[in-house]
Structures are given as C-alpha cells and as structure tokens.
Amino acid sequence: MNKLKIGITSGDINGIGLEVILKTLSSHEVLKKANFYLFCSAEIIEQHQNYLTCAKVPFIEIEPGDDLPPNTVGLCDPWQRSIHLSLGEKNHDGGLAALESLNKACLSMELKKLDALVTSPICKSNIPVKKNEIFTGHTGYLSQRFKSKTLMIMASGNTRIALATEHIPLSDVPKNLDKNLLKEKLFLFNEALKVDFGINNPKVAILGLNPHAGDSGAIGKEESQTIIPFVQSMKNSSILLEGPFSPDSFFTHKFFTAFDGVLALYHDQGLIPFKLLFFENGVNNTFGLPFVRSSPDHGVAFDIAGKNIASELSFKESLIHAIQRSKNRSRINEG
Image (cartoon, rainbow, N blue to C red):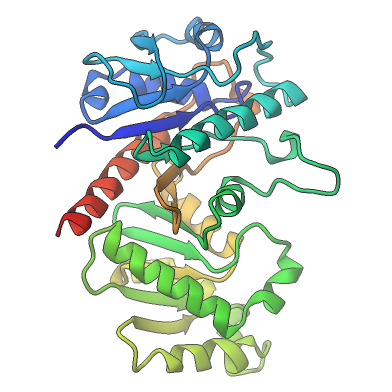
C-alpha cells in the first residue's frame, strides 16, 4: 500500500501550532508513517525553528500531493509573500494567514491531491470574515465548504465523545435538541464508530440535558419530552443506545468505559470531562466530510507561544488518528 498523503495547516502562526508540528515531524519514526504536506512558508518555519531544540525538520518546497523523497516533509506555501511573525500576539495577520493556509489545504482536498487533513489551532475571533458573519471553528467551516452534515468526535484510546450541538450559545441548546437532530447525530456517530474506528456493533450512551437527567421531570422536561422518547424509538433499530444518563456522575468510576461512544448534548458537557481526563493526548475528529479530518484538542495558547514548552502529544495523536482512520476506511472500501 502506498503511503497516505496527509495535509497539515499552519494554524495561527503566532500560537503554539507550528511548535507542536515541528516537534512532531522532527521524529523519523513519525515520518515513516505517511507523507506529510505542511501549508506554511519556509520563512515562517525558520523563525519558529530558531527557538526550538528539537532536530530540524527536512522540508522540501513542493506542490501538494507531489511525490516526496524519503524522510522529508512537503512545504506548500499558501501565502507567496512575506508575513510578519508576532509570537504570542493575537492580530489580524495571524488570523488571515491561518485562513489562507486552511483555504489552500481545502483546495487540495477538493482536488483529491491528499488523503486526509490535520488542522492546527486557530483563534476564532481573529479570523477575517464578511460583515455580520462569525467564524465558529474548523468543523462549521468545513461542513459548509464541503456541504456535509458532520459530527465532532473527541477521542483518546477507547474513549469517544460526540457532540449533538457544537459551537452555539448554551441558551440555544434546548431549542435545538429535537428528535431529528438527535437521530442525525446518532446515525453519524454509529457510522463513524464502525467505519473510522473499526467497531462492529458499537454501544452508545446518551447523556441527559438537565441536572440528574431531569430527575423524572422534576428538573426540566427535555428528558421526558424529547430524549427518553428518542431512546425508546431506537429500541427496534440496529443501534445499541442506552440512557439518558446523569451527566454529573457518568464520568466517575470509569462508568463511561462500558460504552464505545458517548453522545453529549452540548459542547462543555462533553469537552470538560474529556479534557480533564485526556487533555495531553486528546484528538478532535470530524466525521461526515468526504475525507478524514483531525485536530489536537487544545487551542493557540498565545501565553506560552515561542517558549519551547508546548507539548506535542495531542498533535502527534492527531496525525496517528488521521492515518488510522484513513486506513480503516480504505479496508472497508476495498472489502
């Protein structure tokens, strides 16, 4: 089997993204796993390399997807101009550069030059957008660009937490939770667990929305009116779904390990326990796109940028997830 071709975006050049990328790609063991194409310029790479103590990454400037010599990384300049680096600063240049890197990588995915995409951390509030528009993150951007219904899945080892709703205000969550949305997200999750994670008959838990999962209707009606009827409606389907479980105790005593996946109903309900348990090596995966996409589960961390102290473990795991998920899909397609 030919080596997979994995695209990597620069993220915000003033954050820790390029630091963790360079630390990861400095390993010859990593370079053996796939061919990597980084959407960044040699000028910016050199400035980041100056404060790092890891081995220098052997880059070669090349077009996305073109053949690479052994143990090298393709460098695909998305800017074709000089960009000022301001480590640790949130500014327009950093946001624009991040968006341009993402756009160039997406174009390569559209042209099918690459097999998978790993995105690096961005700062949502400095991404340039049209008037009255808001950039809500990679998942929303990719869903819209590729006209796909997607699912965010946080994963580490055998733990996988999917989100029914993502980057929306907490006040908007209840009115978005209806049977149709829950069914759409559950079906995507079930398919992801089978196709990308290689689990034949996945068992999924769904969390409640209110404290104590509504406590039989004493604390909110969403469970009794929406979530419980939805779970019951799935009994005759091929999907193994249990719940709703009380969110405050579900992640204690490793109860969650009895399930292949957990469907959380809103962003912080899933990400707070996930990051407490797996912050060092957690991965954000998107399912539903026409290609595999993964990302580290941390942000730009402007406060430690340029200090050579950021951990690359989550980014390294993101590459591994992208490779393994792509291989799992290939096996299914070939079968």
